[in-house]
Image: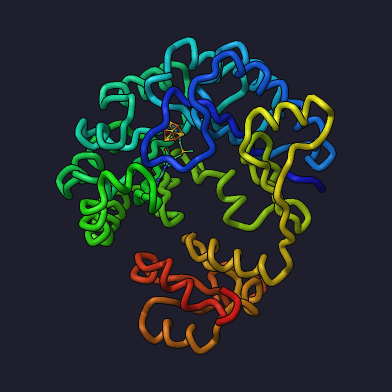
Amino acid sequence: MGVRHLYVHMPFCVHRCGYCDFVTVTGRRGEHASYVDAVLAELALEQRVLAERVETVFVGGGTPTFTEEGSLSRLLEALPVAREFTVEANPETVTPELAQILRQGGVNRVSLGAQSFQPHVLSVLERRAGPDDVRRAMYLLRDAGFENISLDFLYGVPGQSAADLDRDLAEALALEPEHMSWYELEAKPGTRFTHAHGNELQRQAEAMEDYYERVVDALTGAGFRWYEAANFCLERDRAGGRDLRARHNLAYWLGRDYLGVGIGAVSTVDGVRRRNRPGLAAYVKSIREGHRPASETETIDSATRMRERLLLGLRLDEPLPLEDVADALDREATARMVAGGLVEIGRREGDREGREHVSLTRRGRFLAGGVSAELMLVGQS
Ligand SMILES: C[S@@+](CC[C@H](N)C(=O)[O-])C[C@H]1O[C@@H](n2cnc3c(N)ncnc32)[C@H](O)[C@@H]1O
Ligand code: SF4
């Protein structure tokens, strides 16, 4: 049938934020056009694995919307048409002209990296955009006709208080986005950011559980569906019947195959996972010479696939068919977790085959990482 989900990595950023661990390259305006040529050539090399009709396209970064305008429109117009076509945007890059480029390129969903509305939090994160830039970007995108906008936020940021988080939640809700992602800040050991904020990161780590509950309570209380550990979308009845879950990410979480192009991009196709190397110059050179870019590959056997299905599936709010994950589950640990009120096993309403399903309870979802690790058959984690 072919792969129905396409990821395109656009690595350019205006500067590197201290906490960021993504594959990024700062500036290099002069190299944007040749990178887009290379990405489109890589896509042509891989075209045969794609289905005739692609379901989702996700252009992520880096900062895709920092890409030089001519190159960005050329890229978007060359990508397949898709039912969900998302581009990640940084607020300070959003102008009426950019919004038009996105619209003309077939984009129908924008994921805006807000992170916070509090100036001192944005400053610790070394963000270029201020709170007004976030709001302005949202209004500009609405004016351009976008009806599916997601906002990204971070919590557990050095200097952020519970009251700051509550204000962020209220200000985010006031903008009425269709979707939001709320991530716990991850700070890699040994980075400049971790050196600078070590003690405060420790204090924040202790408050994380409380922050998570505040996020979930505020958003579910305001009519959002907590459909994945860090992801929320407007409930269908508030969204005119639309299912606003991020279809592209849902494909990852449900263990579907996907193709990724660009530096650092990951693909999983027919049991093989391939990660392109992060170097920009080497990538462009090998594609120019007509070769696939250098990458690391890994075979995903059926046991690994099942473990991933369990780990990712339990992050979702829909129960998993037990038969899909049975060989990855530690039965004794599962029974303990059921008795402890963290896991539920039972038949699912509407499942005509009457199969048993496994899911986390509300309390289990708050402890999802630890619970899933416990449920995984020892020797397999
Ligand atoms: C690919 S990133 C960057 C998108 C965009 N360039 C931006 O900065 O807004 C997508 C999202 O990942 C989240 N993220 C980035 N670094 C993170 C970290 N260290 N810990 C947790 N989440 C992070 C941010 O919320 C960000 O919006
Ligand atoms: S703008 Fe986004 S991708 Fe770029 S460095 Fe900052 S967090 Fe990372």
